[in-house]
Amino acid sequence: MISSRTEIDTLTQPIQRFLGCPTPPQWIEAACRSENLPVLLVDHLICELKAAQSAVYILRRYVTDTESSNKLLELLKPYEDFIYRKLDNSEFLTTQSFSKSDLLLAPATSEQQQIMMDKMVLLIKEELHHFRQVLELMAHYQVPYENISASRYANGLLKYVRTSEPAKQIDKLICGAFIEARSCERFAALVPHVDTRLAKFYTSLLRSEARHFEDYLLLAEAVAGADISARVALFRATEAELIQSTDHEFRFHSGPVT
Image (cartoon, rainbow, N blue to C red; front, side, top):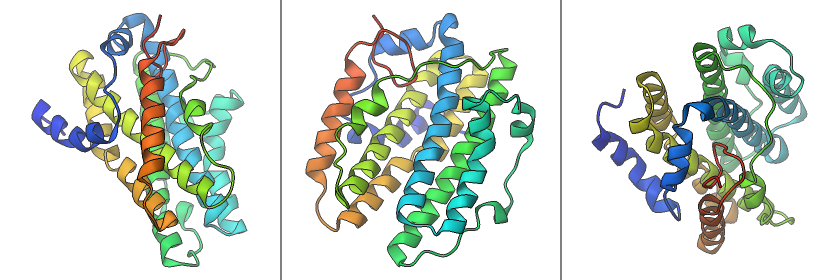
């Protein structure tokens, strides 16, 4: 477990250098209000699923065969049943664990694709594990799951994704890097302001997820086979504008709330 602010700062330094701005203090203040805890946890829960879904999309679109693709969809189904179909399977989800065969996919057809598969499979396992952890926290704080609207954040990034390949794949991977980096930056920002249980949880997430943005960037560079700094700069500026501009509703990735 991370035991000091110095260690947290060390983990977040690469993230802070990558992002275009820090989280505004107004967002942190809003996140720490007791009335916003349910939204903070519910939206975080949804974000963990979306992170896993994004990794599954990349594998199904660019790497896996039909059998492996179907296995990935089956893996997500219980989580999607809970979020989108309102099935009360939370007891099953919080006790679920993966065996090696659950994510044993057919080998990729190239070394580059195999690297992508290995990184995305690990990310999927981690994100779904964190989903289950957030469910446990919701039970602890007596926060029921309720549908909430999505923030403009992800769509605000994705609208700049190009439509032709391989440009689309490169841009989606860059977007993934920024979403992962911002999530970690916010975990670290919240640690000093929340209770002990949440602080321990956010620090554990920071340790396990701090490398995710770099994995996404390395994959984008490998697909491009060329300099991607111009595309990274575009999404950095876009992401910073989304984070600094005001929102009407508090969400995990919202800007300051008016």
